[in-house]
Image (cartoon, rainbow over all chains, first blue to last red; front, side):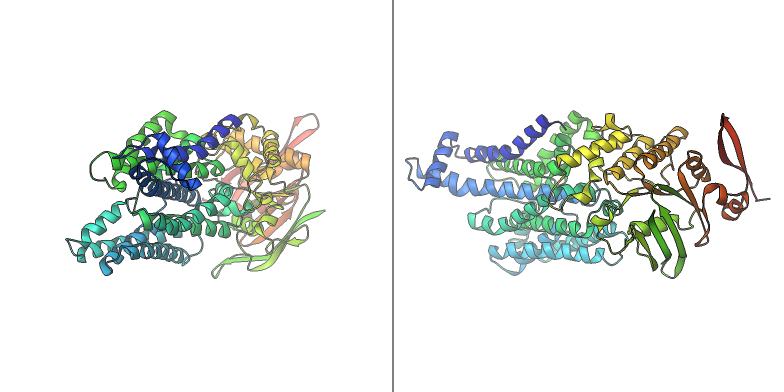
Length: 337
Length: 270
């Protein structure tokens, strides 16, 4: 890739999410002009009072801003984990949920809704079960040692289906008037619950996870050559694989526990990034974060604006993303596949 | 000067012995052709030298240091590997593939420098693939793909390259192209190569080219013979190894230049 194209892609990576966040602060039931948004930001950051309506300040600073930041973190986490797992498992059809983290977290949330009335307990429970699911997959993967990657995938499939069955069981025994709708809505995904305090908690694993993957991003290229070749090329495959699995699990579990199960992003954003920037994970992984963040923020805006009540994110991501993906496939002639 | 010593190597899958008590020395600038029927353990022996499998007994030394105790990065600066079949995954460009040969010189948290890039480009130039460097390697032909794998091994800057049937699946032209590339590398850089092959004529090819060549015949978990091709590749030993009748022929192709070849006559079915 020539240097000009590389520079342009890095510019997109750095500026696009900021632009998307700014746009989403303007849009909604109470439209706020961009200039006012910037003014409000300036006042808040310099601790000055500004003469704008209190209503606008609350909408922009307390409601839309946390939500947009959360969207960026969740979208980025899901997309980079998916991209890293695709490289690790040498399979472009893998997504961030491959090791069972989504179904585990989903079950944790369902269990929390069943057993406790407080919504606050949902996050830790979802996080815990998401991480537990990955640990189980990893342990199953180590039963038979010769082909660690295939065994890991198999472990993920087993654990995912067990937790899916447990989710169904939780739905089956749930009170159909209060608990069941809560579980169903939670599973469909939403950013609506975003408050600064929640983001501060769930943001830590997401940011740590993303940084962990970014740190070893070039090694993902070598790992995708397969375990044996990567070792003969001089890579400590077990260590790098461990770093990627731990980081991706932190990022995905952090995302799922606060926003519910949002499919599609972890599978398709990496592909869109591949079409734009090629397959070198050195640039693919940062671009995945950026595009994942933009995509989720924009889709969340659509969900807020389109109808009077919010449309769950899990539905919209696929409905919007599907046709867009087909368009890109046609445009880039499949990107070398 | 000896580069590789294999001393009393033994390996088994579970209780089933693949080979036992194999010893072999390979010099600097030597090509060693590992011959033997399917399933005799050639690939297993190569895996043990590469360190992807652990020997049950014995040891492998390179430059008088034991390979089994080396860290992957250190080992990869001594031994490079060209696989028999490379599974394509993502359409990386040819240059990106060649740069992966630098992994052993790049720390865990960084990525290839300009110097690594230059080394990878030189390696591609050496095998004549410079014009392909921005092409997705998934779209290359079998011969071109194998040349890229050799370039990746060259970028590793090792004294030894291990090749597992590097010409399997290749057509007549590409087979010769790979063999020519290999003999150039040995002549120019003094590399050593251990290759597993099913064609005894490969050993003759290198010997005819005046390269320091040895053939090691693996049979029932031992070496039936090891030495220069014209000594060990005789009709009688080939019969023991593959159970076929052959004829060794020598002929003059130009003034003073003779070629030795082995011609298969028939199996002993009837």
